[in-house]
Amino acid sequence: MLPTSLTENQPFQGQSGQAVTLPQSAYLHIPFCRRRCYYCDFPISVLGMGANPDSLPVEEYLEALTQEISLAPAGGQPLQTVFFGGGTPSLLSPAQLNALLECLDSRFGLAAAAEISLEIDPGTFDGPKLQGYLQAGINRFSLGIQAFQEELLQLCGRSHNRQEILISVELLHQAGVSNLSFDLISGLPHQSEEQWVQSLQGALALAPQHLSCYDLVLEPITAFGRLYQTGKQPLPADETTAQMYRLAQQHLSDAGYEHYEISNYAQSGYQCRHNQVYWQNQPYYGFGMGAASYVNGQRFTRPRNRREYYLWLAQLRDNQGKINCPVTSLHDELLETLMLGLRQSRGIDLLFLGDKFGHETVACLWRCLQSYLQQGWVEFSDRQGHPVPASAIAISRLARLRLSDPEGFLFSNQILTALFEQLTP
Image (cartoon, rainbow, N blue to C red; front, side):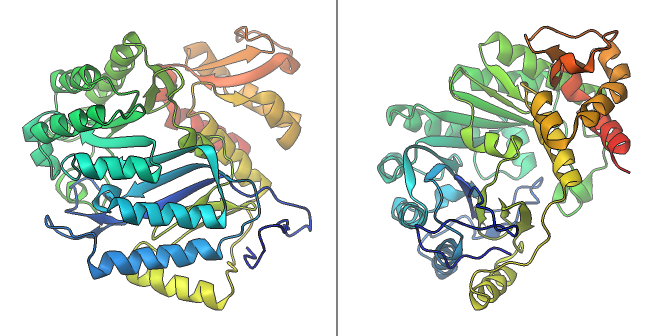
């Protein structure tokens, strides 16, 4: 249960009666898009190419979002990160985003140095609109480029072209944006290794502080999911997509970017603070249709379409903000900690893992991962940061576990499957 009728100065009590640390991060889902991309299975609402931020559907949704924020448990520390995702949040006006930030500030407080991220698409903003976002407090922008080739952009159903990418980046640079991220997708239909390298080089030439490189995943409900089958042409072969991953690691690392997470690269000091909350399995608020929350050991996801979301919100109001969902078990928390932690280049703190989940858990990991250690896919280190060879016997020496880059990351699903099978009764 999530009691939310608390004043700002009341501590939040968990089911055991002990004080609970409330989240210091919030995700807000803005579902509106001009069109649905052919690979997208996100919960979105299509407004058309003439999308109007003042339309009734947008205003109704923002009012619902504000109401949901007002029902959330408060009284903890101010928010350190806020992330506006979607959808296409840059379809909103600066005034609308400012109103949402004011709502968050009123309910939770916003830290003076909070990271406030906004996903934006090329062709959805101009200079004045961008200045409005900056004045509202947005200080990190994530630009959905996906590819630099016109034919691939059209094939994906993107609503922008290469020229709009260049214009948008120039606007961001002119505005003095100093924390800019690009999204790119590999493994697209008909995409070659040469085209992927061209996209990497095109991104590097525009000098973002951060890059996210995702491999295409076919989801059944998407246009791509209906048209294509994994491993079949015109999709690149598995070995080709693996090589694309290696190429990204090589080119971006050579350019000075740290490969700090399985799909993410950053210049020093520009790692996404908000996403690290997820990967470190820390609590977070989620607001809006399809958004997930992790509060007081409880994970829950909202309905994925607006009508059902509004019905859910009405029930939430009737229940005075209380939500019935199971508390994550210690076993599930262990699996989530492994799954999320091993996405990061820093890996997992085994000393913490042993203290929280039992030192036999660390011994079990050591036994299970021996073959992967010998293959060079996983790496153990001791308390001084020195690599621990496969022949080591003293489990107590182990301090960290990480996947190797890039091969361990490439085979992460295989490694995690083995771990989960070993750790599940």
